[in-house]
Image (cartoon, rainbow, N blue to C red):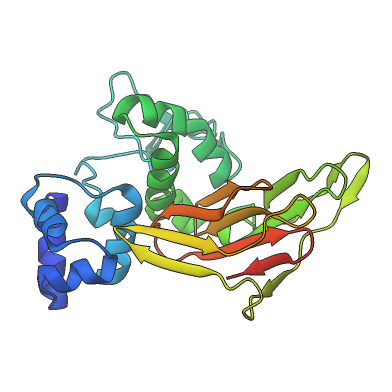
Length: 272
């Protein structure tokens, strides 16, 4: 089943009209119609949102080939000259490729390492941007045998565990997927504690045309300005750097459920 056929079937199974589904993902009915007819394709992030709304696995909407693939990186074994992995005794292991599994051991210690290693190859093979490739792999990898059966050694390998740091001297912003030992300008930096916005920033977060538009009516002076606005999802973090004298706005593609944060030296890290 093609992604367009899977989308139409899932929509009908959920009991939505094209117009109702369009309203839930903030696009036009015509966009949904084009996707279902195969005239155009939703972005990777939009497919994640569609899958979430329709209650189906996102891989159903990715058009993955129905053929054997490495159960660590997802690369089809039909790729020319792609060798199978090997067990500790030298025997062939047909679940994994040799790039991921050699002599009974995995070559990448964790999911993040694997994605970082493979993203350039996926970009070359598909024409995806770096963001699209990371998003694609973040959706596919957890469905494969290695990542299903094994708890990732990196307990913080989820973007929602993101930690932000800010240098009080130079204003440098550091992001980490989980707490880390961070320093800047000779200062050890502590994680920024997030607090819920209680109307202090009067932020507006609007969703339309498949994007989230964030607007904050902040003075943005040299002495009092926001340094960034960030959108944090399951497997992707987008950060908009801000500077004095510019508007405190950001525009993020929808990527499924995500949290929006803003940070300034005076207001601290605020969850909008």
